[in-house]
Every structure is written in C-alpha cells, then in structure tokens.
Image (cartoon, rainbow, N blue to C red; front, side, top):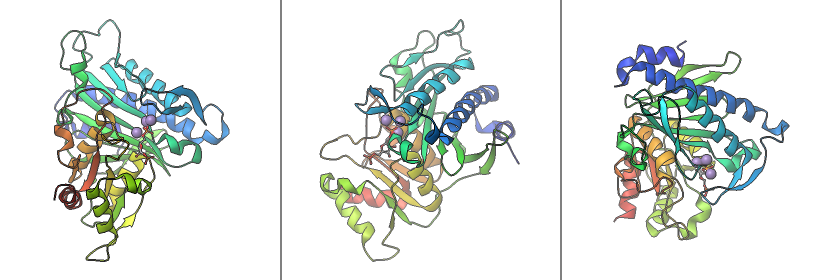
Length: 329
Ligand code: AHG
Ligand code: MN
Ligand code: MN
Ligand code: MN
C-alpha cells in the first residue's frame, strides 16, 4: 500500500521541479482536505456547517458556511508551508499575497488557485462535494502581479481535486497521468487506490443540467437528442449531480461527457476558467480525453480576469468532438 507521499518520492521524475516543493504543497493540501473531510462527515450534527453564511460572494452566489470554512482552511494551510506565494479563490474577489519574511525570495515559488468547496448546493442534502486546485510557477521575481495568476491552463504544473463522497479521494496530475488516493480516515492517510486513471473506451453517460434545455443553443439541444437516440451504442444514460467534481469523477471512471454550455441567461456559461475548468481540463487530457469550450481547447484560452467564466465540455475525445460538430456544423 503506497501512501501519497511515498508515491511522489518513487515517481519524482514526474515533476520537473524539486520533489520537496511538491511534497510541501501536498502536505498543505492534504491537511486542509482532512480538516474539511472531518467537518463534512458530521455536517448534519452541527450548525457550524449547514446553511448559508449570510454573505453574497463575488460570484453573486449565496455563500454557504462550508464555502467559507473551506476557503479559510485552505488559505491558512497553504500559507503555512512556506512554499506558496499567492492564492486566488472562488470566495475572494482579489488574489491573496502570502506575506512573510521570504515572500520575495525564490523559496515561495508557487501560485495556487482554488475552488475550496465545489457543489455548494449539495452540502445540506448529503450529496458528494469537492475541492479543486490548480498550481503554477510564479512569473514575477519581485512583487506578485495579476499576470502571475492569469496564466494559460497549459502552464499548470499540478492540478487536482478532492471528492468528499462515499469515500474521500484525492486525484491529481503533474502531466504524467492521473492518479487517485483514497483517505483511510482511521489512520488519516491517503493511499494509492486509482493509479493511471484513463477514460474507458466505452461511451456511456451524458451529464448536463437538462432543466435549462429551453435556454441552450441549438447545437446543444441537437446533441442532447442525439444522446437519447436509439442507434449504435445509444441512448446514453443521463447522470447529473450538480457538483462538477462528482460528475467529472464518475464520467472519467465510467465513460461520459460533461457539458456546462452557455445559456440564454449566461452567455459565458457558469463555470470559472481558472479554478474549475483549467484544472479539470488538465486532468481530462491526462486521462486521454478532450476539454473544450465548444470551439477552443480550454488549456489554450488566454485568461483576462480571475473569475472569468467559460462554457465547458470534457470527456472522451470522440464524444467531445461529436458535440463540437453539432455546435459548428
Ligand atoms: P460551486 O459550488 O463551486 O459554486 O460550483 C457550482 C458549479 C459546479 O459544481 C456544478 O457543476 C454547477 O455549478 C451546477 O450548476 P447548476 O446548478 O446550474 O447545474
Ligand atoms: Mn465549483
Ligand atoms: Mn465553490
Ligand atoms: Mn460557488
């Protein structure tokens, strides 16, 4: 049984930068994940976790108490390992500079972007939720600037998520495949459980919030009807949790396409490029799949602001390419 730490050391050639940096990064991510996991597991028993925080966040959403808790836990944990110089989060309007005596030295080399709690609408109803993270090298040598955060997804050096589901699993890539580790809560350790995750050959599932059907562009509507057609290996099964992390994890294991398109009311879609779509796109490609906004590769999109949204499609190459053909006939 490999622990996450042992796996990183054994596969040190998977990461182009010093292994110690990756271990320290993971040390803070694991610590935060365990702290959140502990609270999630007893969510129904404590007022601290259930319900709204009473704040409308920068996204215009009703922030949940757990959104805020997860944000605070990750920030504190990432700051503590002296390796991260800046953090951007779904729950914070501006990026956060990690202050400290070595802030401008090259010891703090990494920029982290996070969706601390993904799937907020599922917290109070005991359905899978997650955390998404994306990591870059800083570009600046002195003071951090917005350019350190607005890097294209193809510059990510590490991305992953934690899913708080029937078990808690951490999945990551550094550009050498996708690997998953399950938390044994009795020991507090992540063990390798899903080495080399790849989309299976079978095309089985489509995942989209079909309640928005009447607001979708025609290409998306046609693709949904194509998924439902009785032909070849179709109809596909429809599955949609409403937590990107949960929908993605299931589709990568069972073979399915995930779609959050633009709609009449949200012309840029809903999901955020920097801390939702880019990390998931990096994982998708490393699992042998394709991630697109309908026309362009997600990882090549030039980010213009921290909370930018984009339509998002990911899954097996053939399914995503098929949908693109419906969008651009
Ligand atoms: P978050 O909870 O981090 O704000 O993200 C919510 C996202 C994503 O998790 C999910 O896939 C999507 O919103 C669901 O949106 P709809 O309810 O519009 O389908
Ligand atoms: Mn999210
Ligand atoms: Mn979130
Ligand atoms: Mn949110």
